[in-house]
Amino acid sequence: DGGITQSPKYLFRKEGQNVTLSCEQNLNHDAMYWYRQDPGQGLRLIYYSQIVNDFQKGDIAEGYSVSREKKESFPLTVTSAQKNPTAFYLCASSQGTGVTEAFFGQGTRLTVV
Amino acid sequence: QKEVEQNSGPLSVPEGAIASLNCTYSDRGSQSFFWYRQYSGKSPELIMFIYSNGDKEDGRFTAQLNKASQYVSLLIRDSQPSDSATYLCAVNKLGGYQKVTFGTGTKLQVIP
Image 1 (cartoon, rainbow over the protein chains, first blue to last red):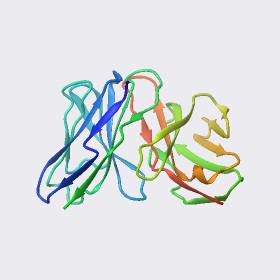
Image 2: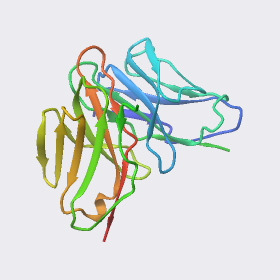
Image 3: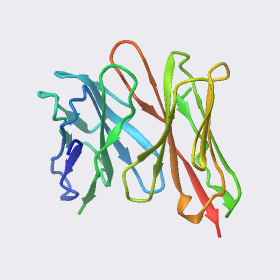
């Protein structure tokens, strides 16, 4: 089945640690996105990538880093510089050309302990 | 100015009524428009998409697009308590590399 897989579903981080959230897609999509969602709030764009080896900052990139070495993979690292990382993180992808919607993974819930 | 704007709500409607959700966008180059529904703690799921001016109906849902006024709306007829969720508007545009832009969503509460 084609889709987007995020792992892990739940992640706990100690203060001061970096953690990496995985996002893999087998839809052959060019564009991939990372969003953060806080309780009761909307989606906020962290980073997006429109093509391999290129990515752009979104609205709240501080304290996060990404890489796009492969078309199917777009991992997000939450660094220790992100002071309030507890949130629900969603990865999405969309076709690079033409008019298509974005597809979402099931999300990763990150909690700082 | 945000690229895609929605009223955060909550929008409360009684069961059986019509819920009207609105979205405005700033980029006149936007070509495709999407409505997603997100239940609490879950991923957004696509409800409808619309590309052309006018109305598009799918069951109890109707999407309306007015490119001249740069707004898109979603009507939900015969609202049910199961429709209670956050509704996200998203826009995309042709040409070059793609970027889908989301609004922050409107929370809908359907009161039994």
